[in-house]
Length: 121
Image (cartoon, rainbow, N blue to C red; front, side, top):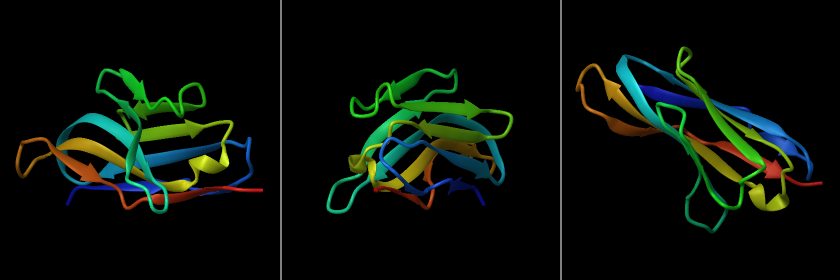
């Protein structure tokens, strides 16, 4: 069974930093793009950042210059380093990845269970 497991959420003060991690586990042949999304209360889920297999990155305008996405292909893990956090960054953060399970040998999009980030003084 293929799954994504996030970690690293929590409570942080405005201006603080935090790093989220998301590791893929299970039986899969390959990982293509990976990314982070977030959903604040009462709002739709939105893109935060994505990173391609070749490390090409894409960011939402609201996080450019503050957040950095990276990946460690050897560990099947994607990270989101978040600096200069603001209260409006408060949300549940979800990672996703395009994985190729060995059972299908086709790419499908998988989601993690989500991790809560609260930015508050």
